[in-house]
Length: 566
Image (tube, rainbow, N blue to C red; front, side, top):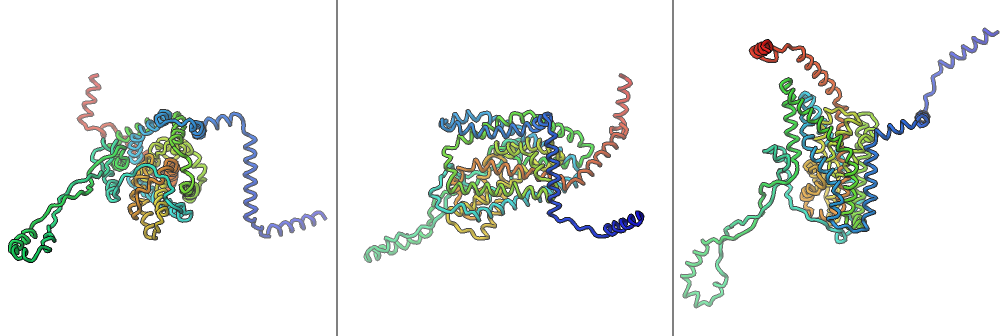
């Protein structure tokens, strides 16, 4: 009886196994995954000890200090505003922040040159070419996307609705011709003097000169109104005088504005980047002959990064005083309200969409990794960008965050970051396109579709030429406004809030450069492995070679004789 029962049970079991299992619904799978993660998080939370907390604080000490510095800086500024400090007192108060800026700028120049030369020299020409192409495609794609976001935001929100008579003007704008600005960009790519490029860049100046232009003189009309008797008496004389007057030419003095060569203070980063890329490619192609130079630039880069590790401890103090000093400089915080308030909100909204949605989405699509884990390692670089308002000054901190916190390959960061800090300005491109259309709205100027396309192209091109220094976007915005015939003097309407928006767009620029380094590293992983294997094999071959193959026979004999003599 029991055997029969077992057979029946086995038959039923076989029938159940033969039946296809019902697929779980997506909702059930999602609920199960959430429950699993929640239980895992609960277990981790229960297992946290005091030592874990200490190690976490030790690992993230820089980030915690930097965030605390920003909060303290804002509190300190609002606490000191009622005392109505003079401009001189504010400058003295901001002195620790000025020191931080000077320290970081001191390291930017050797860091750009050493990182680019050592990074490109460590790759073969094919790998560096592919990496460069990927980086440029990424830069162009993100800049165009940023411009499109800025245009869509300003068209939808329409912050320029109203009269510009109520807007507050501040500062003065220097006249710049769009053609000269683009030509200056190309001229700066090829500096005639590398030493001068370390502290100066070419900039077209304008001067007036007096020009003599010939103007043909005419006979006075009073001759025709004379009496008939007088005309008859002097007809022969007048004919002769008229003929002579027609042949006479009067020289008219006129003033015209002419472009003349000039210069502006500041590192010509674009020229140094171009030179460093070419120099690195040449050293890389020299193989063993260029080994000494490659090692020199590697050592220089390592020394600069160790200096950064020392300066980074001072960064929170400098950022605190930089932020509080800038808030104290604001004469009237109410200026940021009203029409400019809507403009500020529109810019912030566009930058947040680009930084918090577009860039993480691009990173996830390309690498299939969690973008927020990547971005969490960049917090200190982003806060430093907020404090210093300069992507170039933030470059040493960005290197440290990417290489040590996130673990991005040094060969990628050394190539992508210096180039990105020079030409990749997503936040600036977005800001310039948005600001140009805002100024058109304020002037009740209807832009055609063709003019909007012109703004998007010129904003993309002008952002490449924007220097990585505070408020450099205001200079290049003149090019954008000139391209569609908008009044350049209306830039003074937005200067009042530019100090704040400049910090946000700098943080967006730094995030764009860093995400680009992560994406380029993922796409170039095969080339990096191949290049590393080739370098190891070439080093092994060189080590196995006898000494006589490196030096000439005569030299080797001399060495032997000298050794025996010793």
